[in-house]
Image 1 (cartoon, rainbow, N blue to C red):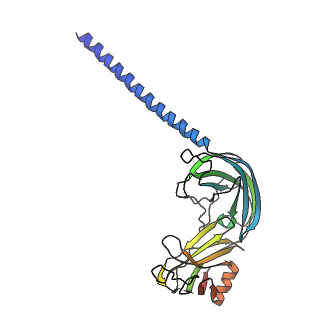
Image 2: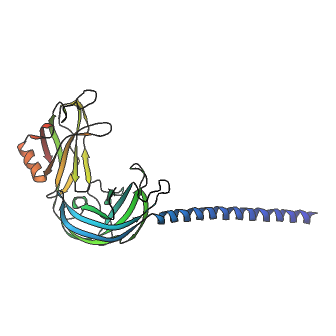
Image 3: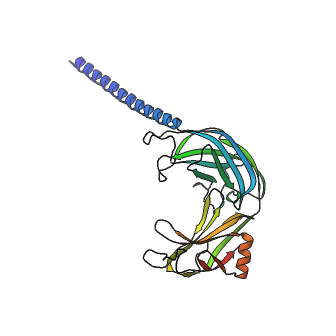
Length: 310
């Protein structure tokens, strides 16, 4: 009787063992199948980079840097929309020194990752096969002089909308490139819009605000090449006014010696900010204007005084 009970107990344990083992294999198989499907989907959307042409030490729309021209074929298909073109294609450029250490970004640029490593992303919507990307030298935290660098390229897509989260796709071919650059001297400073006045009406002789009110004024500082805009600083807003004084000092801005920065005065809006006026300046321009307290006029800006803090 005792022997019979022991035998039944052993048999039940065996069935329990096989049941658990089978369940584990089922889970493992499901995970493996999901992984294979994900990997297959990743490979389905592929950017094949044929060549990377580089021009170093050039000026692009007032910004000194290097230009990459990527020649590539995109293989893509969206099952939902039945299209072979995504909403947009994004290239991300990561830069390393000769010891394969990542280059850090200067304080003011937005071209960086969370770890402060330089990461230059550029988004394309309608280009076919040829993609031009500018690497601005002011964004690289490097000493003046010659530097041997390497770049690494990743690619992403937004599938259906500009609001989609970028999804990385498989990147093959020439995904790395060696380049040599000559870093020019840099200038680091802060800016202050000490005073600004604007017209009562916009350029179409309409009220700045749909309610008939005055403008909600703020200023932005950016560095703009032929293919991107790097927003360096945006001030707080002065509500319902035609004039403002002692607006915020910017954070420290770093530019290459002869770069031009863009200062824009804007009317804040819920959807799209209205441009009141924009103007480009070199560092030497700003010093001269600041020292002489020159009164500036441009666009719908009737008066502006800038101050430079070194």
